[in-house]
Length: 357
Image 1 (tube, rainbow, N blue to C red):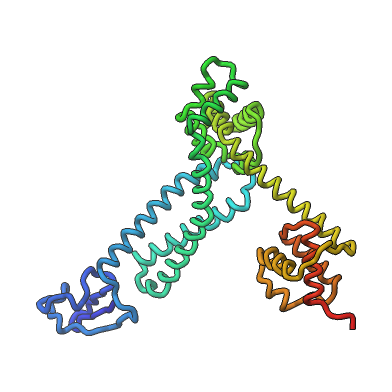
Image 2: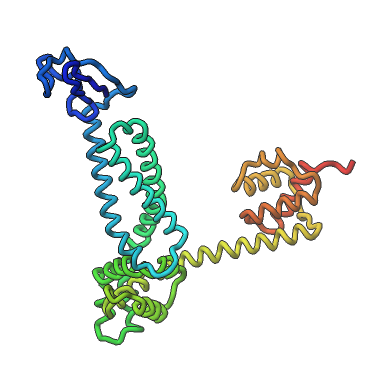
């Protein structure tokens, strides 16, 4: 990228703003102002960076405008939601919103520099482009995995078996004849999914709705409360309420599994904490102790969170310190029963603790 100036009239040919490089101009080319020959131009300045190939430049422009179009589409979809959101944003939404605004601001600044302030191009555009890339990757990391998980969870909701289950359960709360079959159809369930994703988030994060499974009657009451909060511009009519209710009933088995997994995890952690308290408070020793088996147990349990070399670097100095170390490991997520914890304490004591001398 360079600038060449006519020695006669002062006209400057800037490769940064022209479509043709100076070396690609024919020797018969003349100054557009005074018709001076090309040989009468002198080099004013040249950038330290070589010009990108035309194909690369064109690809950069095409993808840049495509990125801008996608951003504008998302912006049009998000602004109404932000305007109608009725309570304080969750932390995840705040991070998402902040990154989105930052990416948009940097994008507009980059476009302005490229189009109107070419002298700042090499100084700022690479940095701004990198910032847009980082922000976009973080946004994708926040949104896309959750969307894929939701898609995988909801793909099996529209099977014939699940629709029959929804129809049966929906018949317990809907009085209209044939309505349970109508609202449990694939089209109705997908309509309920769209309403839940687009309208219900105007008041709260969906996680507050999908935190735990409910009975069909409770789902119906929940949807009615949400319908009472809808705005005059987008009311949730009776059919829409039943569509959302049917979709939530279809989703309940997955919520039940997630709740059960969370409950089982909490119960395992509670048992481990109780075992750690028992080991820390008494001189419990395993009935049979095998040093080699104890070492394998220690490596299998403790390597779940960190390398066993960390214990070698800062080993316990006594049996009491070994008990405290094991209790700390349980607090950080180690799951084990009382016998296993006692074995680990003894192994740490006999392997690392200092002698009484």
